[in-house]
Length: 172
Image 1 (cartoon, rainbow, N blue to C red):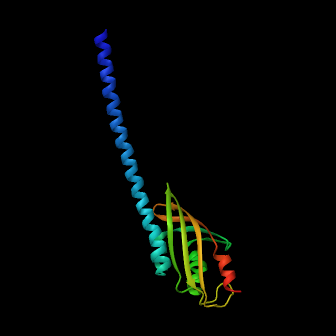
Image 2 (cartoon, helix red, strand yellow):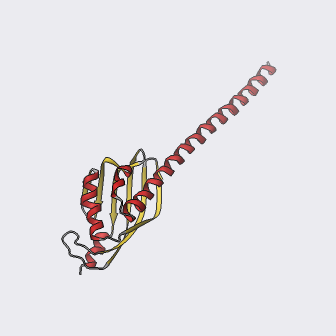
Image 3 (cartoon, rainbow, N blue to C red):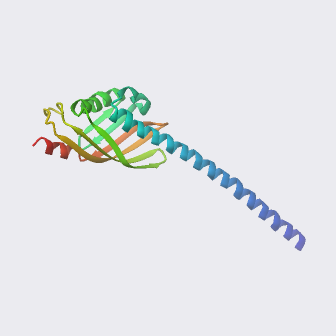
């Protein structure tokens, strides 16, 4: 009987070792996939900042946003849906009023398909914006954005910044 117990204990130990190895491999695979998504998401965020905003390339919006993407801009009270609406009523209007606008970000946090970004921007008010004529003054602002991703594209974004406060100060 002691021999049978010894064999069962040894087999149990071997079985536990095999399960540990297999599950550790599964966890490693999951980490690789998550890291892959993280890298793809970082690439999308970098394209948004560098190519769309800083290089003002609005032609790539379908590569960065889903067709029916939604944008909620707190402080500016914009709620836009769809690439044409986002392009014309927010991005192009902003770029026309601030032709040298530049953005960057301090931090990017990715959790599943959600991304949090701490961003900053600046641009010279050289054109009419929301009915306010150009002041030729520099606008500097900071904010936070939260993105919901579908695939490697932005499906929804919520932002909040001090843009409106700083813009009001510019126009005094």
